[in-house]
Image (tube, rainbow, N blue to C red; front, side, top):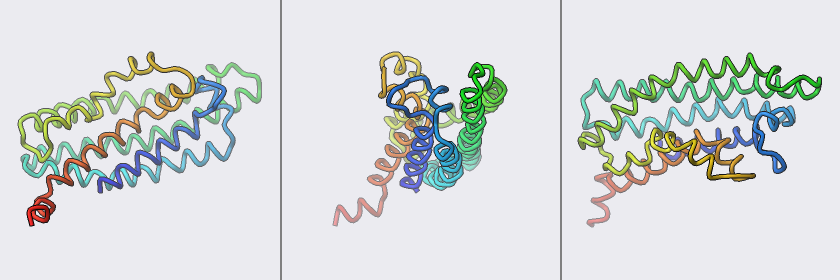
Length: 215
């Protein structure tokens, strides 16, 4: 399940790059407007596939929260699932931004004006997710810190809210192509990091694994 979560992150990161990557430009919206029809369509499809893999990966988090109460475990899972669904929906909504950006360039329309409605819709979707993200972060961090999960405390460093808080700072430190890659796929990269850390941690905390090592 952890590998499924990692694969979901890599898939949607690839979808981000289909939207944003351009070796000659760091203007993400302009890059979307210059992307080919195939890249825009493929990026949209990646959102559905990635959401499936991300959801499967959450089974690992459910397993890690078994020592918690059933109520907390259920709330954590509902929050996580809601966020994963939003990842797919919001990425899919970027197709509208990419399409209007493309039409703006083709028809010599100001790209900010042309993409305004699609961008506002995307922003509204994000606002609905932030309260859920805040609740999940509080529950996850507090339960891990109290040692009521199978995670060690250091996993908090890799929980998405921590790198998310440093997104602006990281963006200022980068430039050129690296900035396009990192900032363009930032939200999926932090989930790849989380699922990787989670997988490694739970792999070596598996009682069956320890038993084999002892033998």
